[in-house]
Length: 488
Ligand code: NAD
Image (cartoon, rainbow, N blue to C red):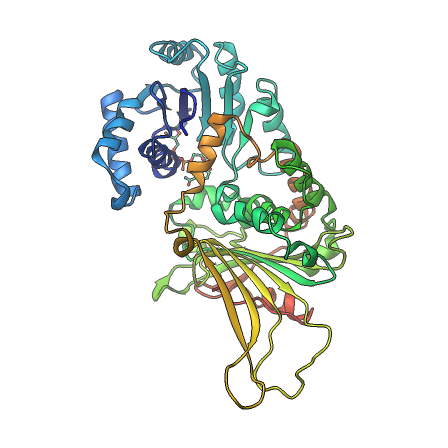
């Protein structure tokens, strides 16, 4: 059903994120009838562009980034008609009245909902919020959306949160982690809590360990200068991987609303085993890709892509535990990296072996039950079981799988995470966004790793592009008698 009319302002409206993700998401929601009359999209940037030039730019972007099956000329025209562009350097104090005037002119109503999406460098978040306040645009009906990176450590995250929090109430601040908007990630909660068969097994009695992987086959490409100051720990682990871990490990909330789910996630972050320098050395592996072969083509080393010597990690694998009643002693293994063999994000819950081996004389392999939750691409779920191979002879065991592919089960296109999340912002529902305390708890947990790695002796281990990361990542599990599951 349609959302309320809204003035959706994107700071950085001509940038990569806006053109590649945000505008295609708004287009698809509009095409499906979710944007009412009076819903406007206002791009703000330093570009010199009038409305027509901006519309042409967005038309190009839609052609490039929306699949042709989803492009519909009437729907494109409808979205373009909602578009406006305001040229504004947000650091230019004197120019802000312009934005104010443009938003007042032709607004659906005096108290129209206003969304301010900050798709610009986080260094500008504080300034933008301050000026929004000064020109009277930060009202109770305004919401602000913050993109990652949310700071680069605990101190900078706090500074950003404080600057934004001086102007906006926490309930109007939407910190986006697009992993939380993915269908398969939301479905994880439904699978756990709207069914009876899994939850009794979802604990240290029956779960042997959990693996979470977010692998990319691409290198840093054009983003080298940003990435080199960040690295995989800040770019992927502190946010996306820890959020996924929270959803796997959290307790069932009494009901689902904006605070209950986030309260439970926060408790998981607070229960993570604190890292010490010894644990960092033992349980956290940093890697950086060297030259190699990726997708059949030669790939350059990371340092050659960024054009300078660097000890920034492009790969992290780590082992941690959630120290509470449910999960005591169950390892959670996390890994992420660039220039790995394929792009795949997956959560694997590996169950324990049956308590008694009843088929000692059977032939064929036995494997523990595993639940694979595929986050991207091809979202879905697969449960690995053991079955008897049909035949008149003895008992021969064979692994089989129960599959839920979203595309096959529902036949419908899985909406992009941004489609869902942007509409949640307009509706004012922050359940799938990170609360301030969650972001800060996650930074606090990674702080000892950042600290340890800031020592001059720290060097990430090199791995050839196109392989599964440094050997030490495999050893991390072998030491515990386990191994990384093949992603599938
Ligand atoms: P970009 O360089 O492609 O675009 C930046 C945009 O901000 C442009 O529209 C530019 O005109 C505008 N801008 C910059 N300084 C400005 C100023 N002083 N006043 C007004 N407008 C200004 O960057 P991007 O890739 O779109 O990324 C934007 C932010 O989002 C970055 O912080 C990035 O880390 C983050 N982010 C990007 C992606 C992505 O996929 N590109 C994903 C997650 C987070």
